[in-house]
Image 1 (tube, rainbow, N blue to C red):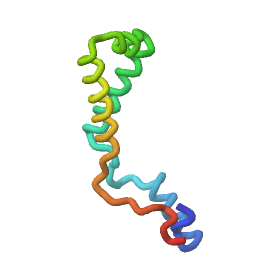
Image 2 (cartoon, rainbow, N blue to C red; image 1 turned 120 degrees about the vertical axis):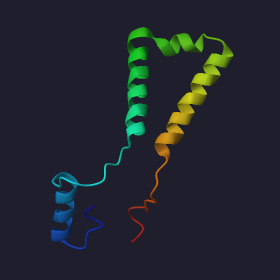
Image 3 (cartoon, rainbow, N blue to C red; image 1 turned 90 degrees about the vertical axis):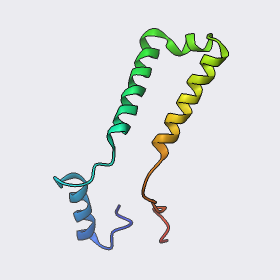
Image 4 (cartoon, one colour; image 1 turned 45 degrees about the horizontal axis):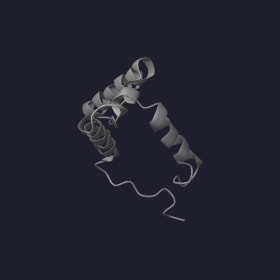
Length: 91
């Protein structure tokens, strides 16, 4: 952020907008939060029930389905609507 600002007042304004502004667009949609909750439930299932260890011993179709679901969730989290330029593209 300091590299993108032209001077110190602009960088302080950006910091204020990042942490002090009351209004703005929320970056996470509801379905993002839902996927995060599913990931939390899966993490808790592994922590307390060793679910993933038992899944590896399951039939191949169940293991492949779980891996496919995992890769799908990773792909969905990586999708963004706006193109974000590389931070050092101006140098």
